[in-house]
Amino acid sequence: MKILMTADAVGGVWAYSLELALAARDVEIVLATMGPRPTAAQRVEAREARNIRLIESDYALEWMPDPWEDVARAGEWLLELESREQPSIIHLNGYSHGALPWSAPAIIVAHSCCCTWWRSVKREPPPQSMTRYRGAVRAGLDGASLVIAPTRAMLRALEEEHGAISNTRVIQNCRQPSLFRPLPKKQFVLTVGRLWDEAKNVKAVERVAPRIQWPVFIAGPTSAPGGTTEYASTARYLGSLSTSEIAEWFSRASIYALPARYEPFGLSALEAALAGCALVLGDIPTLREVWDGAAMFVDPEDDDALATALNALISDDTLRARVAAACQHRARRFTPARMAAAYMSAVDAARQIKATATGRMLACAS
Image (cartoon, rainbow, N blue to C red):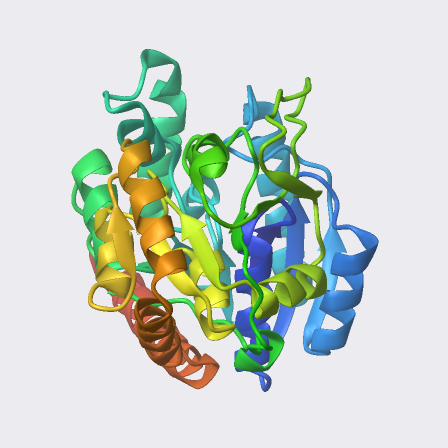
């Protein structure tokens, strides 16, 4: 089987794409990237997957400022790739290209959405400036044979924002356990994310760092596109790290903090849990769905609660060990084999949906 898959090299979609390729080793994946080109390290990761053939472009992604001319050109490019590659399935890690006249069944995976992001982070309806984006998302959802979300809560938020979706599945993400192995723990708190990202809410960890009994390390870029982000001197900044470097930090960290306002699944929390970290997470529906009964939760807007939770874990070795063990046990449920099996079932469903829709069209035409 051959899959034409879209991706970007900016965030979690890249890690997701590689994980799916590794989980479904018998599938050939033509990975068509848009947005900033993959780094040298990311190209090495793609080559090591062996069943990925990487094809790069510079087209703007649909969530970038004024992307629509590039989105249209990217659509023409993707249709040309389909004609040349003849894939069995089109796998879209974005929305707008679901509306293209694909020959093969098209699956959309809803990793995120600007409208649901805005409502969760800003606590208000999306602005009028998102009207065109909203229309593109709706057209893509209507055009796809099947829409997949990583959590039920993300799917529910997507439908509340954009309306009902005909054919859906929930397939939880995974990470390779061998990449995130626990080592003897050290006394520090870790968080990972872009410092300016309001959704990940890394700034909250930065703000409470002076009140935390252990050192606080922040991994991720501190300079936002188009400018420099001011940051405090109370935390220790690691900058942008490769996957292997982040895995090393996870392996040594005792506590991982992610007080997110918006997180459709939370790959970094899964990575940290696999590495044996105790998790302190934002109390939002998606993270509750994945980690309820294992992690500690705090209101993302309550810095006092975040500081209290972190210090409670620091001061109580038994509590910290219990939370870490519960999180690691939960993380081991999200196996590559489980995700691959669910995905192949979804592929079969998408083919059947496409065949049924084509049959109806032919019947109407006759």
